[in-house]
Amino acid sequence: MKKSEIFVVVPAYNEEKTIGKLIKKLNVAHYKNIIVVDDGSGDCTYQIAQKAGAMVLRLPFNRGAGGALRTGFSLALEQGAKAVVMMDADLQHKVSDIKKLAEPILKNKADIVLGSRLMGNLKDMPPHRRLANFVGNLVTFVILGIKVSDSQSGFRAIRGKALRKMDLKSSRWEICSEMVGQIKKLNLRYKELPIDIVYTKYSLSKGQNFKNGLKTFLRLLAIKFK
Image (cartoon, rainbow, N blue to C red; front, side, top):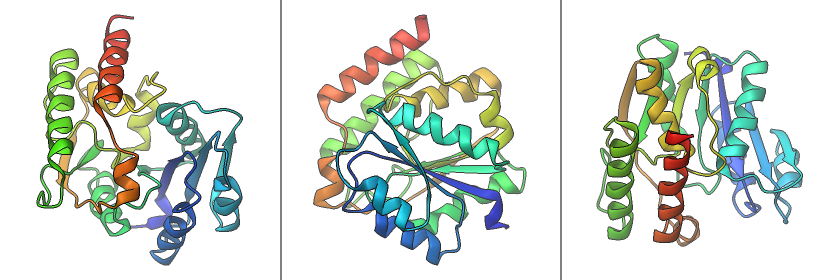
C-alpha cells in the first residue's frame, strides 16, 4: 500500500491541545499528505498545525465540521488523492487504523470504508454514546433508507473517484449521515470495519449530545426534502 496515495483530512476547531500531537503521530507513521482545515479557530490551531508540517487551510469563520471537511476534500481531490481518510483532531482515533480503512479502497474492493465503533471494543464506550449512536443510526435509516452499524463515525476512507461524485451539502456533523445516504444514491461499494476509540475527558467534552442530535435530525430532514 502506497501511503503517498492517501490524503488525511482533519477538520479542527480550537484544537491547539491535540492537533500538533496528531500530526506528529501521522508523520511518524509516514503519512505525508495531511490536510488540516482550521475551522475559524480562536486559538493557535492554525499556527501549530502549520509548524508541524501539515497543509493548512484557514477558514475566516466557523463553517462547522461538514463545511471544513468539504473544503479539505476539495484540496485533496485537486492534489490527485486516490484515497481520502477523514478523522477527528482530538486524538480519539488511532493512526494505526488508517491503513486498515484505506486498504480496501486502494485494492479496489470498496468505494467507501466506514470505521465502526459499534463493531469494536465497547467496554470503554459511555452508555450515553451508545444511545446516541443507536438514535443516529435509526434516524439515518428512516430518513435516508440505508442501515449501517455506525452512521455517525467521523473516521472513514473514501475513494477519490467516489468522492468526486458525491453531492455533499452539509455544514455540520450531519455530513456523516449524508455520506452514508450517498452510498445508496450512487450505488457505491462499502465496507464497515471495527475501530477502537480512545476516550478521554477532552474528547468526550466535544462529543454529541441530545441538543446537537436534534439539530442533526432537522438538518437531515432539510437535506432530504430540499
